[in-house]
Image (cartoon, rainbow, N blue to C red; front, side, top):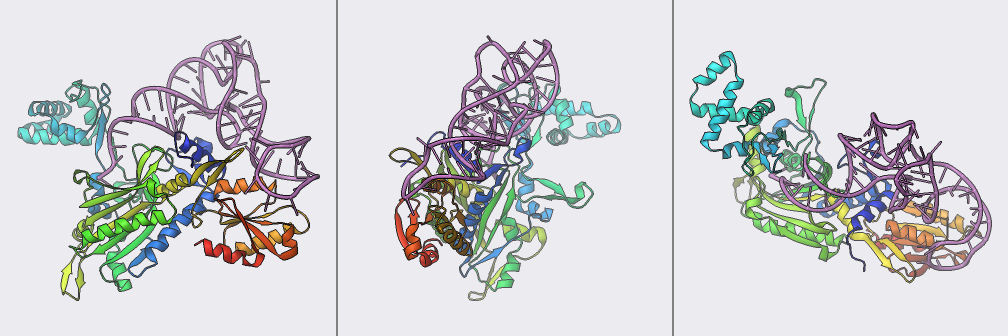
Length: 493
RNA sequence: GCGGGUGUAACUCAGUUGGUAGAGUCACAGCCUUCCAAGCUGUUGGUCGCGAGUUCGAGUCUCGUCGCCCGCUCCA
């Protein structure tokens, strides 16, 4: 068994491009940082991953599906806390390369230095504005100048140039870069006029689409708590840095489920979903030893979470999160109640109790999962005289389920092959290949992870049987032509 | 964002002190082939990431820029 090692990711990226799994976005224009396109095989794989998730999550009584709009009312993101938490201005010290949040830096200054800032700010004011400012008490001046420093880059530039801002790390003054607002939400405008009144955001998580529809879904489906709402969709984050192929991208797809439970039962459900979600990856063929559960320490929890655990996969570059399970408490529903004025309460008839449900979130990255499946499936197998590259996808995820290969193009083998191909195509994604030696054709299929190859040979002409070759073992068995479809159906969910 | 590395055909790479680009693989068209790549013939495909500069002349030197990889930072 070959183990992923240095260079493995490069090989996978190369194979992914060569065979049509993943292309770099806008490649002919030099690429767009952190964006990737799914090619013919990639989109099959992605659809299979999503469909497997969808079946696992929603083909049960207590989870409903949803597909909310990517653009939502801007107030949604105020309620969710994203507007507030996404606008930190960051600066770097050019001298020692330290990075700071500007607002935190200002707060960390001692009084003497804050007064210097206030004084430097005064110098920027003229006429009545200056008079007004000077008339204010010292404390208020510090506050006003601090706000201006943090929020107005022109003010920052001048004050920084005046050598009143010192780097806490190296003590240099005037060495800071201009503040950059690392607003992780992409912004755009609704309608033809671009101004502040019509700003909307591309959602940074799909979860909020579920929360704002909580009452709609609940009432439309006659569900009772506990129940869940599942959704698959694109989300966008303007990451500072993208990295590691599909792992950190600015546009990605999430597979999320929010499970609404009665307060007090949340810990129990959290445990349960943690186990169920881990099992899903294993059921999809991912190697157990490459998966682990990694709890978040309490001091690193997101603003909405009471508890969190990541499902991590061991990529060639190290362990990385492919799914997060969070106990979001009643934070989101309560906030939406507050911001929208609409009730998010649930009435439990059995106990005659009213409560806002707690939420257990399972949030998987479709793109990250796909990458993990790619890495997990990749293997270089040493044979006697060669190395075989094989993608050992679980049959349910494999882009092509089978390939039909006439051994030679004569005596009517190709006609039988084409007929079988057309027939199988009604039920499965299948590939037909009649060019090159049979060995070469097997290798092509191995490289894209096709689990079964069906070969038509001269015996087929005699007794209507074909051979089916297994991708992983390379062993063959002979079955009647008419049973091929059933054979595949049995093995491919 | 910082530092380091890197960018030549679809893929992997070569290209000598600057003189208008090569190989293998793949693909395609034939031939040959009765079960695990690399048999034969032929063909397509690159203004050497992009843009300036130096030079009589730049893939080869300089600067800028973009992408990718590694490390740091960041990851609400």
